[in-house]
Length: 81
Image 1 (cartoon, rainbow, N blue to C red):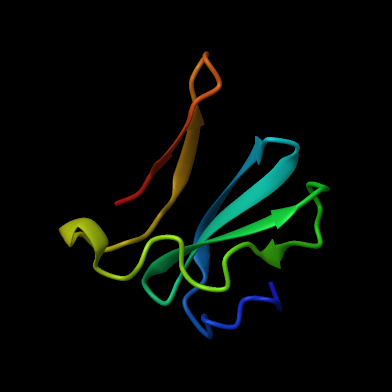
Image 2 (image 1 turned 90 degrees about the horizontal axis):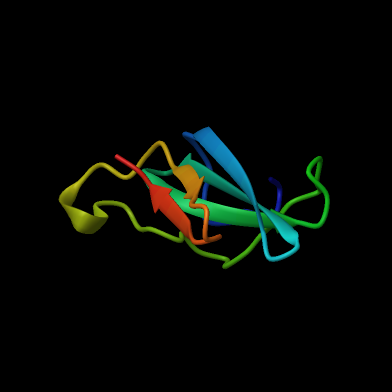
């Protein structure tokens, strides 16, 4: 993910979901969660926001290990620990 300018280290624990016609790749970097998007599952992916989706220390937890769940009604949930 060369387009992620806010993260220089600690990228791991990714998950990907197909949402509204795009592939959204959630990843952990710099103790934050980022989101990158692509129209193809193999990429290329580009940083969706130019900043973390969920910042370091948000919600009083270590922000890591994003996982996406889409329920039967099509609602998406992002879990992390």
